[in-house]
Amino acid sequence: MKTIGMIGGMSWESSAEYYRLLNTQVNNELGGLHSAKCILYSLDFEEIEHYQRESEWEKASNILISAAISLEVAGADFILICTNTMHKVYEQVATKIKIPIIHLADTTADRIIKRGISTIGLLGTKYTMEQEFYTSHLINKGIDVIVPEGEERDFVNDVIYRELCMGQTNSTSKEMYISIMQKMKDKGAQGIILGCTEITLLVKQEDISIPLFDTTRIHAEEAVRIALS
Image (cartoon, rainbow, N blue to C red; front, side, top):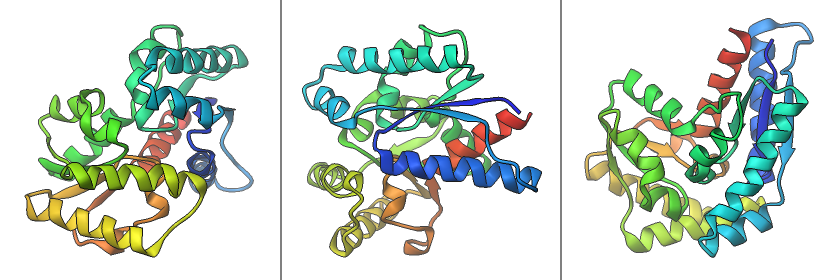
């Protein structure tokens, strides 16, 4: 079994879900007392969020580069950046180490294509929804992307940082998320990416009739596939 390196803590709530999924899936595959061989480098999200807010992405990337180098030295065979948003600095981190980083958007795009879907809705932080570092990976694979309107994007982003990253789920926020997803469906979305690892704490597949793509689960499943290959 290969050793999975995880850059987590962004937030720790979703990193805990990553850890649960990795171990559950390895055990499902191998049975017995098997669990995932993994190394978690958990960052202080307060520091990362500050650099995000101030658009100081180079400083944020330096923190992730340090974490990635530490994981490589510790014996990881490959790395997961356990957050959608910080894939903005994927290239900067990937060039500083010799082991691969499994890109979350590429992995999600492959899953969408397998389902025969060509138009997808995207929920995530404002950075993920508005900037090309994430959507370009979908568009380059022939997938059209629909995002919420401006005020709705602000709402989605605020709920992530002010509630979900704090481990809080609010029924009013959930209803609004479902309404936003429905609007994207009405505009032609055949499925929706839950493009922030915390969103799965709030909405589930049963909340809407089109497929939801849980990036946390998809990323974890791909990691286990690689680890056991």
